[in-house]
Figure 1 (cartoon, rainbow, N blue to C red):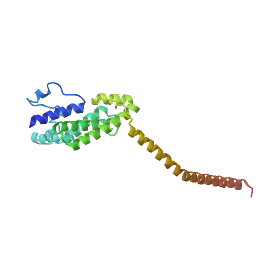
Figure 2 (cartoon, rainbow, N blue to C red):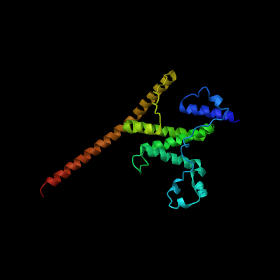
Figure 3 (cartoon, one colour):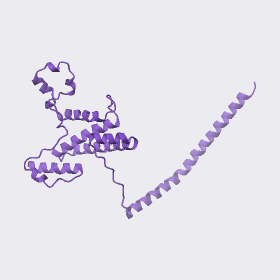
Figure 4 (cartoon, helix red, strand yellow):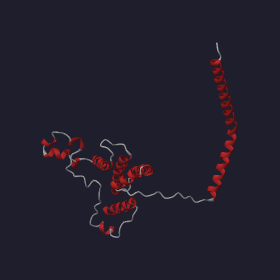
Length: 229
């Protein structure tokens, strides 16, 4: 039962990366496949962020330190620490938490966490949808950075190990049904414009009359001010 699940995980990882699994991937499943994780570089003895700055932490027992360390923490807390680590690479200032580069770093950590989860659970549709939403959001921010600040865009992709690919050009096949729909929509648009023409003309004349009345009132006020008493 474990082998098909591992095979599906390998295939899913290859699809997410846009590549194909190598020729020896099936043989590697027999000895147990260890998938790499972005959380492997986080030491398990590292204390949690809320306890690391306590002055009394050096005097507590080793058992208490183990309980307060990342070894006993959940996946969500480890992902938060990874998000901060990636944000430190592209942060403009120590208190920068909302720039485009930091948002890309946060989204990158989330996307990689979703990818690791989907490698183990390929049928999790909810996390797949959340991952695709995060990828779309990161694409929009990277596109904005590439258009406005290309040097920051290059540095962000380099520091976060992101391979930016251009979207494929939009190409739509012209069919007879599409041509008929387009002609029908144009005809409907023209008829609607004809029906709205009298109303637009009426509004334009009302605006012209109001403008003339305002101009006449202003001229009369100027004449009264210039007439000697």
